[in-house]
Structure formats: structure tokens, C-alpha cells
Image (cartoon, rainbow, N blue to C red; front, side, top):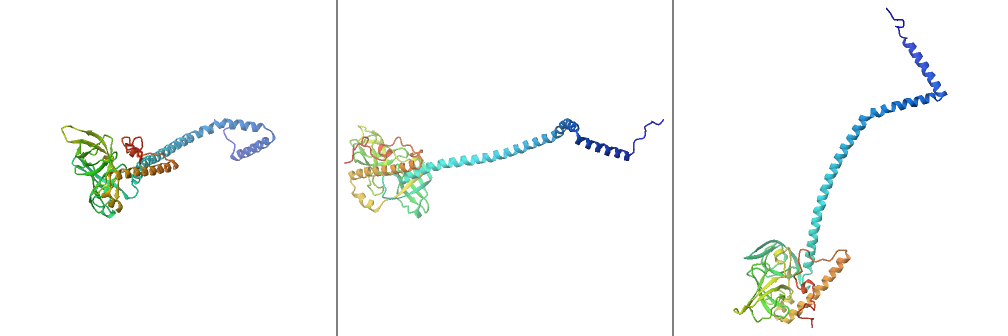
Length: 347
């Protein structure tokens, strides 16, 4: 049995009806606002579908951005860490350079004398035990170094050159058991001989009679005798004086002023011809006056350095690696204080 409306309209008829409906809708859309309201309602209903359709893309874009940002942050973090390590290394180097700069400045103003030619040398290696107290420096025959040349640091006498190579030299320290140096007590001009004991923190005075006026705290300076060490350089401080009635000689212990156990830089001295000519005729009183005058000159130079550092905006400081609390007033202040100087004011 065939249905009554079993046959659908032809395609041509459908096209004509669609065109007519479209034309009717366009004409009615321009004549009233009903269609505008209807279209707005339909767009509102369909808008949720737009968001729903775009949700997967939005989620994927967010995940991709997070991955990119994380990777970028990791790279930036790595770069910043490397830069931080470099800056920290530079900061450590800067601190070290500041300390070395202070040491070198102290050496160049070191101590007392300004009339001699002097040159900085760096310690290459050290040999310090009870039987051998020596160091090797990076200056040799090509730099004019000679055997017997005096060596000092920013505080006082270090030793003398005993062997010279082309580019390096060996220095015998004050504390070596084979080393002796003629010294003078600054307080009363008594001249004695200081010898090494094999310890970097102790010297001994040889053959000192019990009656000799030497007291704890006396400053010992080079006397110039022998022509090896120029006069007036600090050597050590008397730490202990023991007078035993059963012994004709007193036992006198001296602490070296030079930092023999932590040397880094030293000064090579070339005494002038005038120094070598006068050294044999110097009296103890002349040595004492020379020391006092050079201490005052050294103080003036240190004050100039302090003013220059303050103008540069840098705090004035002595070398942080060099303790100065145990030094006498003559060395700490660079000038003899009348209250602390046992000699009193210079005449």
C-alpha cells in the first residue's frame, strides 16, 4: 500500500521556495525589529557553544604557555646562578686584592726611611722548621739582587739574601739559628747582638751581662754595625728578661716585629753609598736620633695616605691581616709619643 504523500517535492520546487523565503525574510528584516530581536536571542543561545568549542584550544594554549614559561624560567635561573657565582668569585678576588693593596702600600711606605732604593718581592716558597728558617723570593740577579742584601717588611727587618739565582733568591730569616744581627736598644743606646732560635716568634740576645739596662718592652733597632743592615730599622720587642744570680749573663727573649710566619711580600733594600760610608762612624746617639726623625717622617707620610683615602671615600685601615695591637707606640702610630717614649721629647 502506497502512502498518500509518499513523493517529496522536486529539487527545483525546493529551490524556488527557499529563495522566496529568503527574500521574504530579508524584506521583513528591514521593515521591523522583530527579526533583530529574534537574531539576538539566537546568538545568545549559540554563544555558549562558542565558548564550549574553544575550551580545548584555550586549555592547550595555557598548558603550552606554562611549559614555555617554566622552561624559560629554568634557563634564566641557570644563567642567573652562573652570574652569581662569577660575581661571588669576583667579590672574593676583590677582597683579596684590597688586602694585597694594603700590604703593598704599607711596604712602599715601610718603615722610617725614604732615601733608599727599594723594590717589592713576592714570596715563592717557605722553609720554616726548627733547623731551617728560609724563604725564596721572585727577584734574582737579573733584578740586581745581591748576596747580603737586607730584606724588610712593613714592620721591620725580615732577614738577608744568602743565595742569588737568575730570577729568584733565597733569604735567611732573622729567626734562623745561624743568623745574628747587631741591634741597639732605642731607650738607652745599648748595643747587643740578636740571634735566631729556630722559632719564628722568638730571638735571643747573646752575652748580655746581668748589669746591662735592658727591660721588658724595649724596642730594638738595627745599629748599622757590620755594614750589612742600615741603621734605624725596627727588629723586635724585648718580651722577657731573666737574671739568674748563678749566671753572669742574663737571658733576654725578643719577639720579632716582622711577620715571619705569614710573609707574602717583602722589600729589597739598596743602601746608598752615603749610608755605607757613614755606617762605621755612627754613634749610638746618632742612631737614636736618626730613628726618631725617620719615625716622624713616616708618620707624616701615613697621614698623607689617610687623607688621600678619605678623599677617595675609602675608610683608612691598616692591613687587616697584620695585627698591630702588640706593637709599641713608635710603630703603631708611626711617631714616638712623648708619653710612651722612655727617652721623652727629642732635644
